[in-house]
Amino acid sequence: MIHKGKQLLQKRGSYYHLEIAAALVNTFEKKSATRLICTIDAKVTLRCGLNHLGNGHFYIMLAKRYIKEIGKEAGETISYELEIDPNPLGVEIPEVLEVFLAQDPEGESIYNKLTDGRKRTLIFSVLRIKNVDKQVETILNFLQTEHQKQRAKKSNW
Image (tube, rainbow, N blue to C red; front, side, top):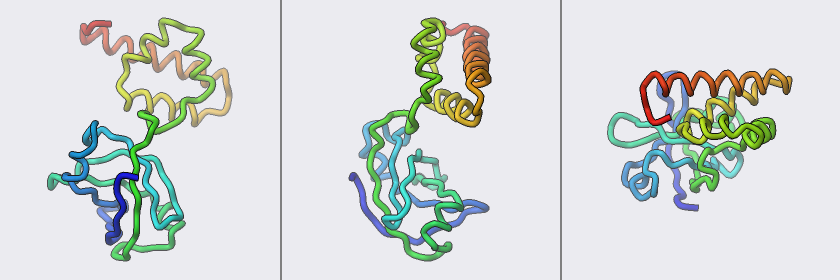
């Protein structure tokens, strides 16, 4: 655990959030790019990233389902614990993607050049699909599109 605290549950627009001070974020090796595991009221644990709040500080977005689960409303005190997620992506790689990358060196090369955010986008796209053939098709299309984008930018691909 890297930080433990209490604060009022905040709501901004249509989402709830937990504010994280810039001083704490600046102690992280990857600063605001750090992936975290957040436990709220010892009931809900989620993997998350940091977003800029606009006043120099950061926040963690909390889905309504988590708020329902802890039984709190905006303005009520919540306790939380933060720890650095040992998985830099903050999400497990689906088996179909692991197998695909192991069998396709060119696809693996493209995947390895993606930012962590783009990798997460691909992973979440694959996880939404139940049919393995469609998952593979999604992986192929995604990697081809990313490769074309980078080539169009004339980067070092």
